[in-house]
Amino acid sequence: MEEILELKYLLLKGDIKGSLVIVEELEEMSKKDIIKAIRSYAVILLLHLIKQQSENRTTRSWSVSIRNSVREIQRENKRRKAEGYYLPPEELLETLKEAYLNAIDEASLEVEEGRYEPEELEKLVNKEEIIDRALALILSSE
Image 1: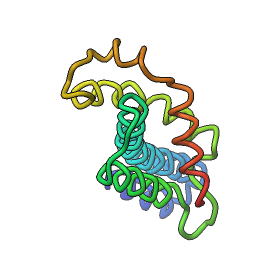
Image 2: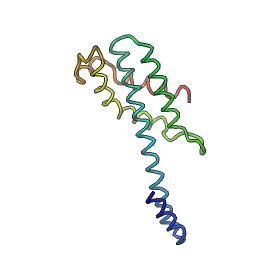
Image 3: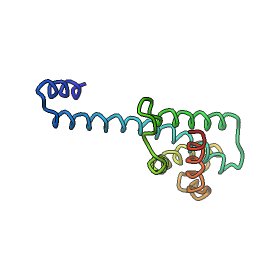
Image 4: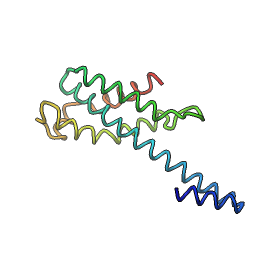
C-alpha cells in the first residue's frame, strides 16, 4: 500500500522516472508472490510424484492431488489481461528444482510410513525424472 501512495505522489509531481521505479518494484513484488504460490503447489505435486515413484504405486488421492496441483500452477502462472505466462518453462523448471528439497523432506514422513530419512529417500528416486515429469504435466495443458 505504501508503494501505491508513493506512486500517486510521484505521478502528481510529474516525476515519471521515479514513478517507473515504483512500478517496477510493484511488478517485482507481484511476481514474487506468484512464484511463492507456484512453489507451494510444486511441493505438493513433487511430493506425490516422489511417493508414486518410491512406492511404485499410486492412489486416487495422490492422482487427484497431482491434477489439482498442476491446475493451480497453471492458473497462477497465466497472465489474465496481458496474455502469456509469468514464468516461462525455464523458470518453471528452476522453481520445481527449488521446491524439490521441501518435497523430499515431506515425502520422507509419508513414504512407507516415514521409514526413510530424506537423504535415504533421495537415493531411492530419480530426481531429474520426477522434476521432468512435473514440468511436462504443467506444460501439457497450458
